[in-house]
Image 1 (tube, rainbow, N blue to C red):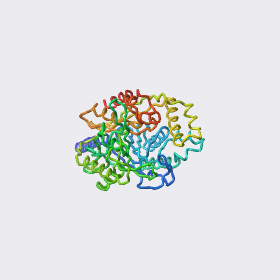
Image 2 (image 1 turned 120 degrees about the horizontal axis):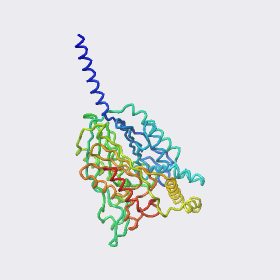
Image 3 (image 1 turned 60 degrees about the horizontal axis):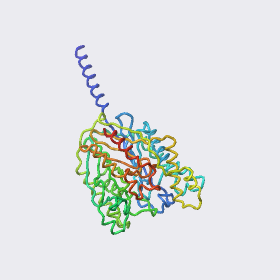
Image 4 (image 1 turned 90 degrees about the horizontal axis):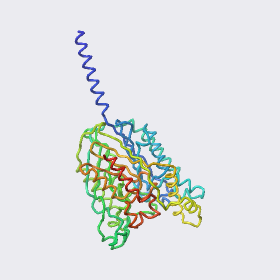
Length: 453
């Protein structure tokens, strides 16, 4: 009898140890999705919100089991920059019980969505301009709601056994905004909407035509899908009609087609990419672009290949870089511009945003780039309005693997062009748009190569 008792006890210990070992390598995921729609009258982009076409959201995931929790969030706003970005990360980190360097927050960049930059708002406050461009109280409420959702949903986390990878070409959406002449200089700009026949007839130019998809599964049940595509997400805009735009509307369509699976969309390196070749800016064109995006999302889903994943295959990588502010940024001139009552309000907003970034750099701020590795899949998280060439370069660094890129994390640096783009002219690399040195290309490519090592 004693011998049998010992055998039973040994068996129980071995079984318990085996289960414990499995638990240690168990990846889990929590999802969250909260309303981020501004009230009527609240400033969005450059005008007050006059109508809500469809709701905005802040949605994302928390990965558990691979070290400290990892939080990835996408928000239907035009931009989240400087101290606004810091507050978002800080409060989400606290809610998830992790550190800020394991949190990344990305705006999708819809142009009838709110902006969030508490430092720029503070600079405008002295002149009574803050409320014209920022709804600070609303922004803080959304941050708190998102943090609270994370606290709740971590308790509802689900095991992750597999990831799914998919890819599909998006037809007739993206086109390069910069049309070069024979001298290598920008000859024409083709923005998110365009009515210039010559610009419309020009080739698409350098783009990344593919939408990439990463999904998380518990056995046979899909839990959440992350999607990545590089293009400005504008169709009909700057009227104050709040919308998640054609990318958000396509996302909503997919949620109806795949019930119970949260769909999260990220704008890739779309700083010099927009729908201008295929969009004349008319309201009627939004559903056309929506249908094309939804078709690609569905095709990427249908092309998906599932593969097992464990927590030991998940890694969070960080590279901190010091971005050099553009030489054109002058503190005295920016302060004078903010104070100048004869200057247009939008220009004073730009000056405040530029000064907030300059002071941030002077204070020794380091910009954190991160990469989520899921086995041989890599998801990069990058700042600003990044040119598509960075995304293409990252993919070439690991041509046999899936490489996704989400841009528009810290909106502070504005557009980030390639070094040669600053010699070519054009809006994106001009002093009103880009707040970094042309040498930024080498800094970022070096950091990307380390993240993808």
